[in-house]
Image (cartoon, rainbow, N blue to C red; front, side, top):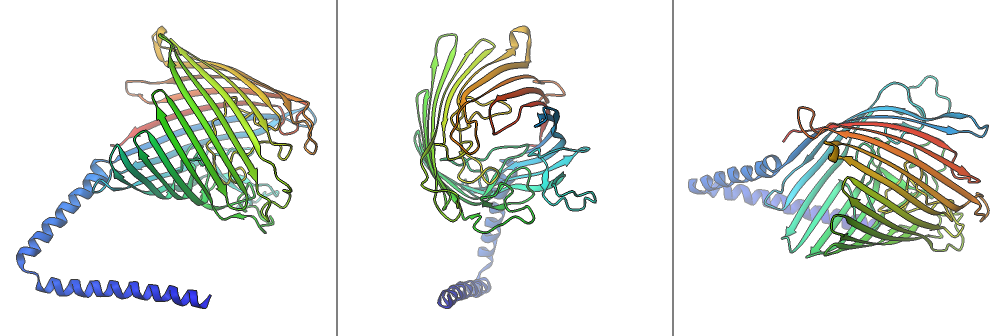
Length: 476
């Protein structure tokens, strides 16, 4: 260890000496520079400033987002009574900045937001900051509570090299990641990582790699290490021994051909989990109608390690999904099928390289509903839904949808491989978005959903109502 420290100090000393030498030589050169060189240097500085202005102001985009989120979710308890599960009213304000590229190479992306709690809330909304110790609450009863917060969610340097045919794009810092088996999902704001993402493109082929060691979701104020605990070791009194997942990393490839696409990924959560995926998409023009087909496979296996003390002789798990979208006129018909098999090792399939809330995943599930992902062990699920836009009625601003889901062979025991359960969902939605005039961009949506299960153990019956009102102002 001492030798490593000495080597580290020696390297720092060499770097420091080099910097000092450069500064001294710069001073000597400055003293010997004639007036013409000084003028040239001044002109170069002015040109550099102009290029910086072009990249970070003229070519940048700057947008203010606002979002009013209202949710009321109730759940049937063990006594058969409906009780509040989530009650939430949140106002979000966010600044979204994306620069151009300085010298056509380097740029900067920022996202800063505040999520403001309006009135009292119940449960974990996954929108407001969740304080596990509820500091400052005189009536603290051992449960956490939700609070307003502000955060810098994205602060990423970006760089690009090459051209449209062959090139490389790199992002690093506090950044979104979307390649391989890692993804940045959204609450009211993007989830993000402390990490690096690199994507090289060769015509229609994209090859990518990403690595990250910290994660921030929409109910945390800061970036935190990834852990084996859903609360990222933020709950007081929780045993944190052997809980830190050092990093997650992934490689991915995306190939586009004609109206089709193939998306492959392989990921590793160090000493915790490995996963892999394959997605295929293809679109058909049926002459008056458009048909899109998708096929998705995801596999994973937990690692037998100190991070997984209960995992013994792990087996590969799987999720398969098929989907179809048929668009004709104002209608879009949606159908999906899925099959989930954790080999009895977990109650629900985990698409992540960490537990829930410690990272996000790139999944393409075909049979999800508003209240259920239909990825419970054993579940064989189907979905049918339809969206309609009222443009033919002179109301292109208005959309509506209705859909249902059903699954059988659902895990019916927490401890045994028993599959006698079933579950159903019913969802509907109405939305209105102003397309012009003074309120252009104002989007108002209402979602209503219900979930029912029979002989299942992972979730209680639920009803849900969400009202979402969003509006964005482009500053430049």
